[in-house]
Amino acid sequence: ELRDRFEQFKRRDLYEIRLVALFLDATFLAVRPSGPKEGVLVAWGFTDTGERVLLSVMLGMRESYEDWQALGRDLIARGLGAPMLIVADGAPGLVKAIEHCWPDTDRQHCAVHRLRNLLAKLPEAQRERVRQAYWQALDDAIHARDAKQRLQALVDDLEAGGFDSAARCLADDLDALVVHLRYPTRHRRRWRSTNLLERSLGEVKRRTKVMGRFPGEDSCLTLVWAVLDLLITHQTNGI
Image 1 (cartoon, one colour):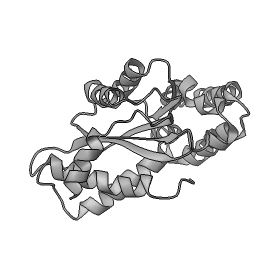
Image 2 (cartoon, one colour):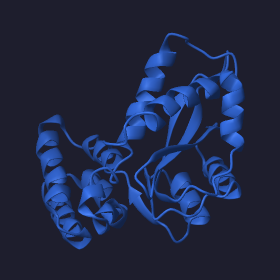
Image 3 (spheres, helix red, strand yellow):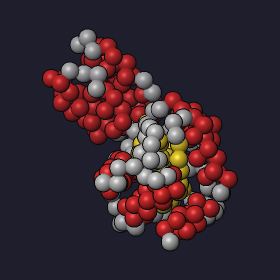
């Protein structure tokens, strides 16, 4: 029954969905009885009425440009109009696919992903200070230009402290990190990261961990879809 419903989910048309924000992320699972883990790509979003909708769950073995482009083309072919905003991490293949499939859509670099990358380039003693400064810059900013100036000050501080790799990490793609601040205040926190999707994917991993490996991609994708459909679509819309 689940497989039949998943097949219907993959084929359904999306013409009537008026999407405002689209979120893209992936998780890696042991899809087959042997071999390396493979990427499962996921797309979901907010409609113009505030409804959460799961849009796609598909295999992307390498999470490459070609994989993400295939997902984007499938959504467009099934009738999904261009969203106002896309929220995703900064993986080069994903960014390139977004620019190809939705060239006129704003792109928000996931603020949580960027912070993780930044902290990984700092010694333990510096991480909490930088974490607080990073979130304060985004939380206190009144618009995108203000946030960029605040984050640039943090870049300068890191450079002055000799943390050049961390400074370059934060400075990279800085404009995309503050895009959410162009939008109404009530949406900014929920539209600056892929957190809800990451938490949902974490729940997928928790529920599938006991299985070890899946017998094949059909069973893997069906179960991932079933869990995400429950967590994203059928919960209340508040975050």
